Length: 441
Image (cartoon, rainbow, N blue to C red):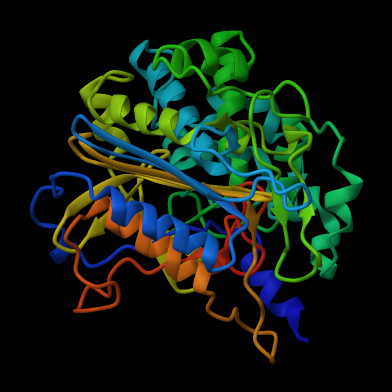
């Protein structure tokens, strides 16, 4: 199987659960009405029936809320998932990091358009594969980190080198490894640059948010995890969200199974894992209800000023896979749903866990969803692309139905519905949110 070529295009890119549709379809406010609880229950069950081990979701429309779960948290014991389970949310952590930096912008300690070498010059010393790294650092601004236009390469293949040989041995070898954020940056700078700083479209890279976390530490004098916990997580009142201090998740949670497109068969549990490799790009643990609360508070101006939120919502095209781009702001992206308006949020993926969270611009309509089997798709016979999975279609229908109570049929009309990009596998965001074309965290 010619998997090598495909893996090369997949690693290090970001993977969004849903694809954007043409802007012309974005007109009109998000739909509002009574939640169809029976339909939400049925579409969530359909995700499990399609082959997902376990999944859970929280949906909100105004004051109405619904939460559900379907399937297994442990395939060996038969333990079932519950709606309140804690979960690694991968690249959704980037929104938390961006909020923290915007708070420092409001305090005058960080300037979005200042070069990163104003804050962390020590990260850009010496000569890398693309020439003088100090010169690169002088050309990269804080804004370019947050909107992925810095074109710094991703560190994932450097941190998990066996992936380049179509082997997942690194995942097991490094399960309890502690790797420093500076080492992650070194690996990212050693990777080939993906373009000129500031060039569009940008290229999704986890390294950007590791540098952002180190800038946060420099200007606040605190660990990034400490600052984000006190000034973002606690401020938002998130009672079940945290940065893990151990390889294990505290509180009720599911096992997290990784298939890696069939390289791991049967899928292996990675719920116990040292998440230092993800740092501020994707290490947060949360629940679907907490994620809804977080994005609602962000979009209604409770976590940063309206002027800061406007900066976060200034989007640029960012490539997540060859020929595919999304509209990405500062730690947040936008999705236009035909007939139901514009939604903001992020998705994320780590070994064994996938998550998506989307909220209407007014904070009223929301869905957050998590699942516990990753990169379940399979390669075609030529080893050049992923085969469609019924799980992708089922997740799409649940998310689409939660956001839009009376939606167009997915795939109908010029908007093409909300097409899933699960094949990309959020492996490439943090980890490469998706080996085959999408990135991990």
